[in-house]
Amino acid sequence: MARALHLAGRALGDPEMSAVAVAALRGVFRRPWPHANLTGPTLCHGEAGLLQAVLRVTETDRDPVLLAAAGVLAGRILTGFDHQAPFGFRHGHRTRPGGLVGVDEPGLLQGAAGVALALATFARHPGTAGTSTWDSMLLLN
Image (cartoon, rainbow, N blue to C red; front, side):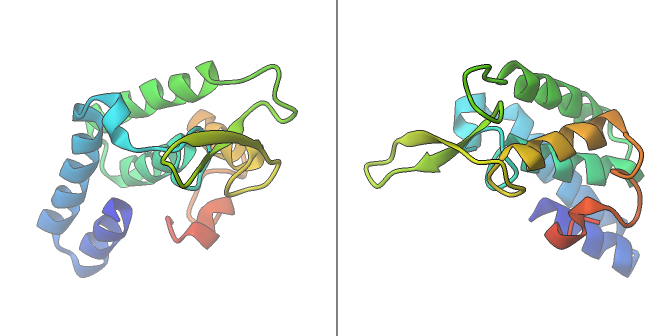
């Protein structure tokens, strides 16, 4: 939502709207991490999705808090690499009682591929950053 607001502010020439989006993202990193309500390292409701949104916002808004947070978040994702998992990262699937179960998926939204792409974008690998890249389908660019 913050990225959508940020894009709207840029499209409408409304810097205050974009600033609200930056403030919202900053707020995510001010909260205690367990309250971030992320389901794990993947794109869909996870750390890689938050990382990609922050990376997109910081392309035009070089906010020092968000730039630092992106580094911390990327490190957190990398620390969560699981050598026992077939694809290295497990998607956190919510169960009805409210728990999380790690699911092994290779895919984009809920799998290791999306995590790898977000980390590659963080590292600025060719073909992962720019105006038209892999995250177009997420409507982040």
